[in-house]
Figure 1 (cartoon, helix red, strand yellow):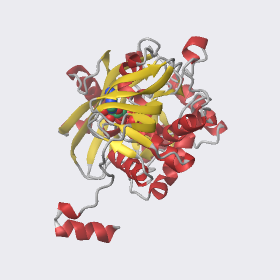
Figure 2: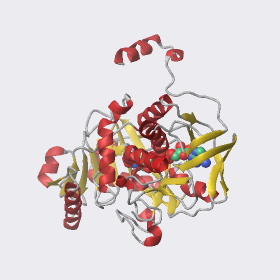
Figure 3: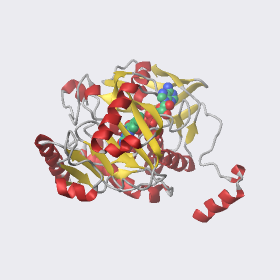
Figure 4: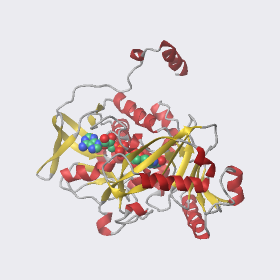
Length: 414
Ligand SMILES: Cc1cc2nc3c(=O)[nH]c(=O)nc-3n(C[C@H](O)[C@H](O)[C@H](O)COP(=O)(O)OP(=O)(O)OC[C@H]3O[C@@H](n4cnc5c(N)ncnc54)[C@H](O)[C@@H]3O)c2cc1C
């Protein structure tokens, strides 16, 4: 593989590069239409083909694959959750990440460099101890570090004079990062190789329902009949569900990400600041990749506003004052599908043949492998996968919420 890359690089001939997925005429009917060419939609298509032999599938993407949050995130993967409904699901995802590159035969740059959540007060330490215990009870690795152990690991933090002194941290060594667009491309390639049609530049504009059952989708390229239709459109979930007459417990908010100029290797793990909302890692190119809170208002625009930039930079300076000398090269925004309890939905809808994958909030990238696997299971078998059994749509009516960090009707306060 590396020799092939080198040869192609030296040849400097783009035409010699093999395309990762085909482009082909759109059929007028598919067994399954997946709306949304993000990592979740593509992973679902991949597992439908691989695990269930269902290959008469189209993934419809209005722009290009990875155009949504899947190509915009800060690439953090972890399974350090608290709630019983969440831990097994995210741990399944972690285990799938660990074998993903072999499974896809594609370099997704999965890097288990550890995720360190810092705590800055006694109550926060107690909350992290509880989370760590919950993880260990589920067989997930977690270590509660004191201040000196954290200092040994990341000596460059401001331990002494910060307004919120670092007291310690919760470490998941198996957490880390994965290259987001490589994950999108790897799943696309794997699905395409198994016969799935990936259709870019085709927007779904309507969902046709006959006698309570879905019969297909209206698109900018005409009507396409479908036996089953699956929504995997993250920040656009409410819009698409609205086309089927459904109202979801989801709000769309913008989340921003930032990339600095490249520096020498400094941060060899993922660090999150516990006294504000700030998380940072260093890319292989040397840039620091970081982010913070969602912008405090609902939006479908994939761009952010300055108050949150200021907030993120303030948090970074509280933790590592030296970052004040760095220049930010790029920033962008993505649309988040914020659910009212902070946990996702992978379920059937009241419309027969219409399936929903949504509510990923800040954390859908790390969920990609398990989300794809469980969503494919649901679509193929019309039954929930055990790992996603709690992600029911009706929990918002029955009150069986998975309140990981839900802020109810104010997701901006997460
Ligand atoms: C700045 C930022 C940082 C993040 N950081 C992390 C992180 O570090 N770790 C983590 O786990 N998660 C993170 N996330 C969250 C994560 O990126 C998302 O939860 C995840 O990528 C959602 O994937 P998806 O496939 O469901 O949706 P998306 O990737 O958003 O894909 C949905 C696709 O649907 C398409 N679409 C929408 N409407 C239509 C239509 N009508 N017809 C056809 N196609 C349509 C869109 O164009 C889009 O490509 C972050 C998100 C952002 C924005």
